[in-house]
Image 1: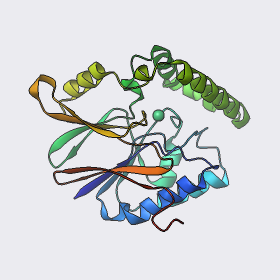
Image 2: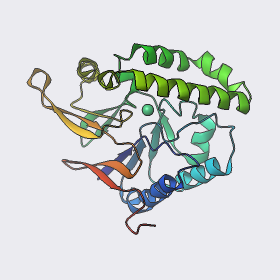
Image 3: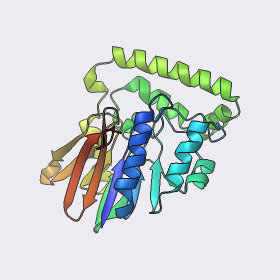
Length: 243
Ligand SMILES: [Mn+2]
């Protein structure tokens, strides 16, 4: 039995190589797994389920063809993915955080942005954008208005990232320890930071792991849980045939 996890593909019309990488992954790896999880930022930006473009329709189509149980979590770029997207693709929306079980062991799943608590400015923005009434208000704007807001937010985020020390853009170790203890798990899987790694932790002599999924760029990344194995794997995004 195996579970597969990906995140941070940042799918965008301008990067058809990454969309092709996803198609390859969905055909090569997903069918033989039992469950498939996308832990946020599948899209570079999602203006709302009513934003119908040929690109969005194409992605929805390939996702809808996945036949195993499939789950998606919001990232900070695609937090407006909603009910209609889920109906069209057959994905189930997972709250952030969520606890699942694999081989009898509870596992904590998060996008990861909420762990970066030292970035106080971002935490304020996140808290604001995750309110239901704020999202409703956003979705009541025209697509043009939403696109302008998203462009603005990305520009501000880029400026902010440039000006913010690298260690505050990463997770806060104490926050990791706290959420794992509160959830009673010894495995946390998240994305967001674009720092793929398997971290061995030992809070209070309790061996645990934090596995960080990678963002897709020149390489694609996935995590495969199979029995006792936890394999964080990268592959050339152009695909093995160099297609
Ligand atoms: Mn993110």
